[in-house]
Amino acid sequence: MDEKAATAADTMELLILNQAAIRAALEELSLWVSQRGSIHTHDNVMAALMTLDTHAEAILAGIERLRA
Image (cartoon, rainbow, N blue to C red; front, side, top):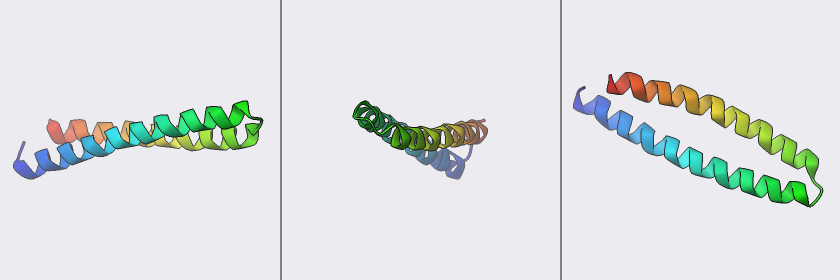
């Protein structure tokens, strides 16, 4: 793996870790909101988090390709 690919993979890995942390925080807040009666808001957040999960899978696949 050349230096540019390694740098890109390292950067993408940091971004995916940040994305996971933000996802966890949003899910925690969404559960809190849900417990207070805003089920619609919770459902909307969970749908957005599913999109993050889908994109995370693609990002991880890209990282694997760069590291190969």
